[in-house]
Image (cartoon, rainbow, N blue to C red; front, side, top):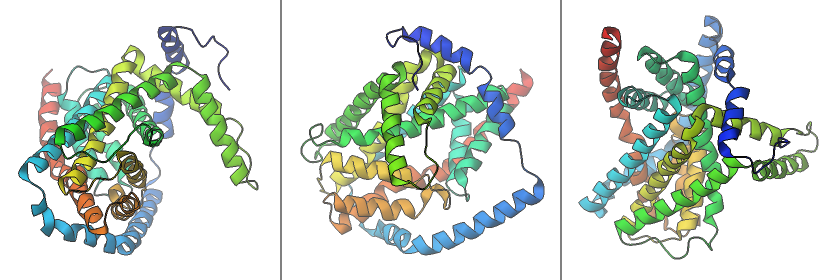
Length: 367
């Protein structure tokens, strides 16, 4: 349940309390993530490789269908393609800013290098999310960052970014976003920024007050218990949400406002990239419906049985865009363009991250 402190207490005091409560949280996470015995790790890898192979076989038609639309890339003008590249670069830069704030470091290079390499690995390896995070952790520690605080920072970033995705569908209410996607790239970017601003406000409310978050937890808990009557009922979900919220505040400290803006920018610019893909080919569904499709795609990307949700995202996003009123052909082409910038182009950048890491390690060794 909610804490007993007054809800109007200053945020600074709340942050200080959170820091005191979770000073050792990162160390506990690191101890819990100790490596399993070698035979167990080998069996686990074989299992995930088998599951990934079967899954890729099942979703291969969707992937091939989307990739096969590359011949229609001429429908995109050079200006739209450049605009999508800039929007996606802004999304990644926002993530760098968020990680830098969580890590409490001044240097950008270790953050950029580790994120590029870890992100690339997460998109090509089975169960890639965990492997990508492990690689980024290792590279940050090699760059001289404390191991315990690094674990806590990466955990906080993951919690904050995924929580924002789960909250974004609320903004799809038609009363908030009317009309179709704009023909203009600038207006498309403005829609993405509008979503980011509203999401920032909602996030600030949840981070600074107990009652809204506890209420959400209570609603979800009651719904889950009604749907799964035969299972053991949940009883502490609101309290767990508040503890995770406090953990985020403990890691970020007084920088939580900037971190929240960076999180909103990460998803706002990414969402604008999808809007731009649709607008570039003359498809104009309601932005609210596109936002629902976008959020669904991000959830599908978390499925660990294929790298980066490969296949599941393509199949799910094209289907959801079709439900939003996009024609089948345009949905496939827009999905291809969006995944080109958000999935495929970051892969070779992993090599750039590894190259940057050499310089980072060399500087740390000479320091």
